[in-house]
Image (cartoon, rainbow, N blue to C red; front, side, top):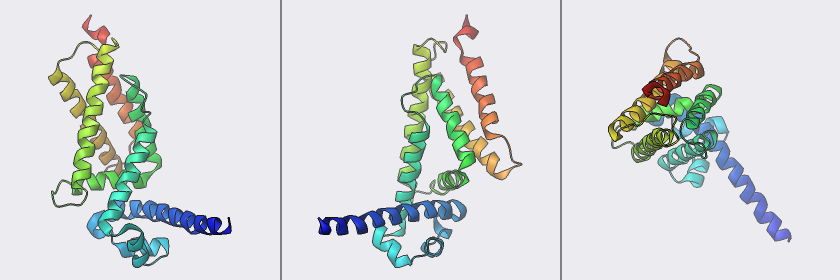
Length: 206
């Protein structure tokens, strides 16, 4: 029993330390990008050596993947998976609110989305796959809304276009929120969502 407690102690501390490093690395990579966000910057903020970080993650690239997986898990928690159709717009609205309240994650997303367009970037495959999954999710939103009778019938091309525009609008509004005069990100998203409903709502086609 005593040996079991001894094993649990170091193991638990290792998990907590790993979480702490991921949280700090999220801020560092969000502020400085992957190249500028050095392991030394992360280590200095956490109060450990770069060697300690490498012992836990293996490499800077693997630390970045751990950070992105953390961001992905948080996003899925904020957007309620069970919501469908028009109700799913509320999930994306909550994501906008969450990003306002957690600037570090928004910085990370915008920075990685821009940097990872380069095929050689270590986050390229992850971000490319994430974008494809998000687009499919948004396409399903419109298909479910049509099936529920909330939206008028749409062609596949219309569904794909609306999904692409929705993702582009969210990314663009978030970037403006970071770079331009501070805006009410949630209110801006509400305006765009209302425009979608007004444009695609079943009642507009009767």
